[in-house]
Image (cartoon, rainbow, N blue to C red; front, top):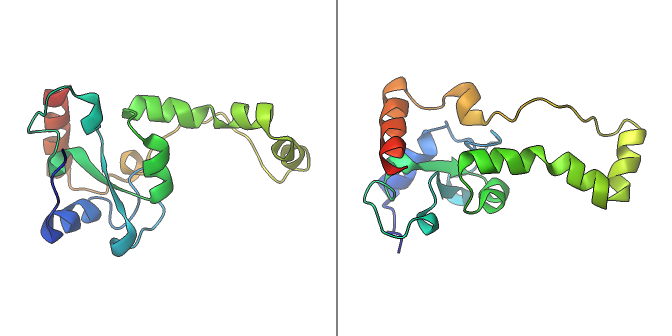
Length: 136
């Protein structure tokens, strides 16, 4: 069972990416942001203390948090990369939008906001990376 974060802890998570979603980079309001566990609590049979800590948490918008679900970062990245193929296969409106130039596809690798902008200090990133490595 996950613990309830204090207001100070929520503020710490929120500030990791300067008020933006760690994944897509959209601005998120403090009162409406989701706290995402980078390493999902549900994927561990035992509760490792380092999993339910600020070091394993990122601020997230609702849609990224829901889409990421219980995936690890690389699976989430792979799922995002596959969206255009799934849309082309399943949604005729998408295909029309591509043909009329309303949507442009590209094959750039998915890079998350926190990777591009490093919303946290170098020391905080090192601490987070160390904690995540210990948990893997």
